[in-house]
Amino acid sequence: MPSTHHIAQFNVARMLVPLEEPAMADFVAGLDPVNELADRTPGFVWRLKGEDEGAAKTTDIRPYDPDMIVTMSVWETPEQLWEFVYRSGHLEYLRRRQDWFAHTAEIAQVLWWLPAGHIPSVAEGRQRLDHLREHGPTAYAFTFRTRFPAPTGAEVA
Image 1 (cartoon, one colour):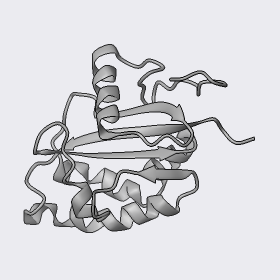
Image 2 (cartoon, helix red, strand yellow):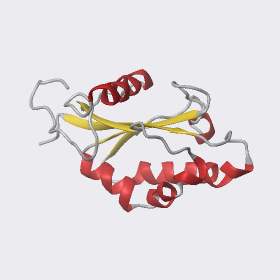
Image 3 (cartoon, rainbow, N blue to C red):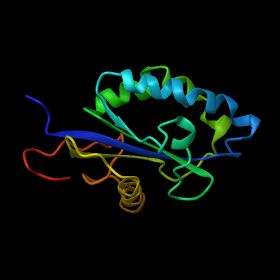
């Protein structure tokens, strides 16, 4: 029986320098391959794309400030998202995040359940992250470490 809910993730990162700087070249070069890997990964449903659907345009979406980029995607289950993030070629780039992004004490990633078929907006992702930062993990907005079960039936997260 197909799931009635999928898991969404939204994360933010503050760049150390603008994307055009040579220090960001390896990160920029990895955008398309990592996005293509996500697209092929079991459980992948959707990811945020810019107007031109190219990686460079995706990084133009900056809902917080000009130095902060975002990613957002939807997956069938949190386990499938975890596999992509921590057990695929994505991990190579995640391990190098300090080369490109400032360390922050603030929570940078949020997860939440959404009805299968719903495509979240960037504003929705920001709202969920802001809620998590203010209230900690709840069924509305949570983390990999503190997960909540998918809603059942017609229940809406």
